Image (cartoon, rainbow, N blue to C red; front, side, top):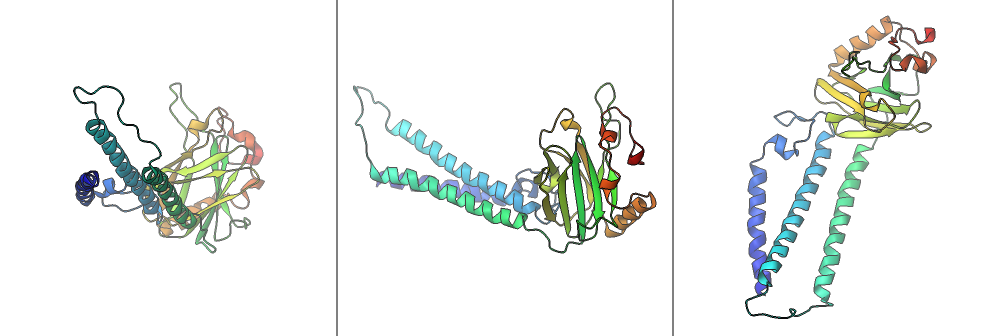
Length: 299
């Protein structure tokens, strides 16, 4: 009974300290210092806060478990230390059923809890829009990106417009000198991205959106979300895909719907219309070729 009373008095201040600490947190701290949020807590997409919430709450639970575990270890080391004049081994305990049941049930509850919350959030994150405002096909290739823009149907490419990325070129110091591919998204519009690979496995990652998905040959992946904040974001391949993997970067511009429509018109005016696969030539993407994206059929 005395031990239980001590544990009770130890847990209460820990709970109070946790509550006070969280109440005084800034939006940046509440989101675990993750990217994707402004200083006032505005998220980059409609699902960014869900990801940060799962991350932060998981760490809070793990920290509490760690503090209790470390506290019990310290208590045992002090309470059951060898006293002056004691000799021999202390009294040995074995087959203590209450303790063994406790050490089995608590980890099981933690595992089931983590799985349940992760599965719940993943089901929401993986739910695809049936009729999005915009559908974009993002194509990964060694080592750049192509983007094809359609309306609500990613499979209908007759009226699509596209941009084709070229492997980033570098100077003698290794600094990137050529322009990175840019993905343009309309703010506050439902966006569905079809993820395709031309060669090996890649991974599509917009860092501030706190989500990434793999791209395979022969299996198309999809990702649906709504950008909620205009701005410029960084993207990259998150799967080791060969020699120039570290240079497989792209930019993301989230703009107003009017700017987005103007951008699509600029691609039409440049003649970049139709299915991008009809114009594609993989050789134009080789490092050091100095290739442009003007007319891939001339490569």
